[in-house]
Every structure is written in C-alpha cells, then in structure tokens.
Image (cartoon, rainbow, N blue to C red; front, side, top):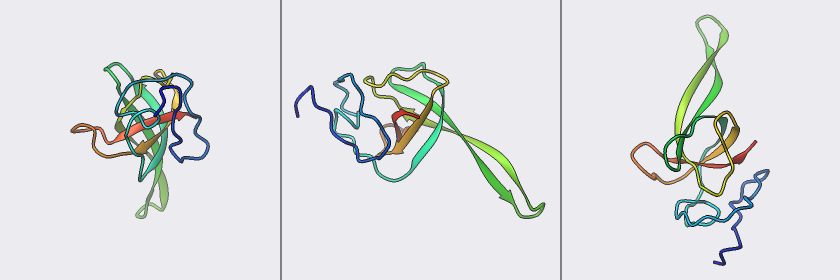
Length: 111
C-alpha cells in the first residue's frame, strides 16, 4: 500500500486521518482489522506510548427500584500516532483482536 494512501475502515461517520504513520496496529495504515463493538467515550488518560484509557458512561435499569442508574466503565485502548487526540476528547473506539493483555480496542477518531 502506498504511504500517502490510507484505507477505509468501513465505519460511517469516522473521518480518515490527515497524517501518515508507520504503526502496524493502526487500522488506517497498518494491518489491524476493526470488528465487533463500536463505543463512544471520553479519553481520560493518554500518557503511555500509543495507549490510553477511555471512560464510557451508560444507563443500567435496576428492576427492584424500577429506575435507572448511571454507571461507567474504563476501557484500555490503542491510540495510533496518526490521530490528533488529547485527554478530554470525545472519541469513538472499535473492537479489534487482542493487542496486549488488556488492550482489545483502538481509537478510530474524534466525535
């Protein structure tokens, strides 16, 4: 594949990055495939090299009290170097094959 060309990951509404990277675990310039869940969340930690933590919040229905409660979970993600994201950004992440022990999601872009 040409270095100037990035491939389409097949997710509607996600913009392709402007920069080019040489990361083999990048869904745009490497060989990583996106399949399964798509989740929106907030990038709360981005300090390690190419990895971060995304917090997602969701509503859970408690049948005993017949009301909803707000819950949140943290998901470890791989951040490709071609994306311009920083802590506090709302991002969309996609499920991939396991990249490491705790990382099975990759950041696809900003929301």
